[in-house]
Length: 375
Image (cartoon, rainbow, N blue to C red; front, side, top):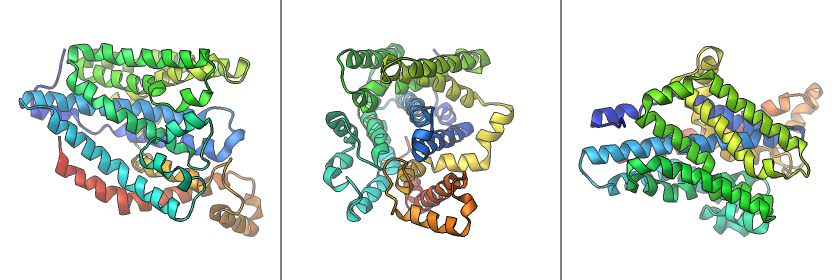
């Protein structure tokens, strides 16, 4: 079992993986299109994008934790320092813009925020959805951030304090428990929202990302062989396509595939997509994923995700929303744009503008503080 054994090797293992920002760009764009087009989208683009984020998070967090654990062992120190650094660095990246956004939304009395603010402040809004079997409105998408934060609460302890020889089977255990929990919820007639938003039922997505990181670090040759295989990528795509077909074909609309198997097959396809991106796509995919625009939009994807539903949501944005009033005024001057793809482009430009301001004024300054808390 190969594992980083020197501080120099550890730092090299933490190197930047260029094409993953491109995948972030694709993931957040799929989510935005899904929420902006609503029922006109026949494929679960948003669900795929969120699952891609979950698998990617599992991969990146596990990679950081395993390598930090190896560095602790090499330096003969406890893991308490690495745990502290992990939570400080995550907080600096995630909390500032999130809590500033919540403060602004509460001040302007944005729909549903004030009444449920304690849930959002404590990252438990997904539990609120599971209890009440309904959504919030234009801030629905924040459920996935709660899932991520709840995952961060326990997973670092699992990696740091379970011996490496037991880690892989622990990851498979999490994947299996997640699927079995969805089976149980489906069999007992639980509301579909419960399996959709709860952290334990999302663990197979995070777990697959973690298995990917484990293979990359401990079994590099086997990892490279598996994720280099175009046949395995295509096979996972075929399974995902079969899953989509079964979801659409079976009755009722909420069935075994929508509520149990979809996240597993979606995550499996994401597993091979991310693995391929780690070693590097070639040709046109390399060009797309490593293009400066893709990289930048991937870099600001957190802001894009936070703000896109506030710009517009096909189900919840009222006709008098400022973004729609501006668009309507623009189409008075250029009526040929009224029902064109330019509307999506307009929403995209507004969202990118907000995320850019957020990145340079809030996120990047706080992100720069992470250098003071190196592992």
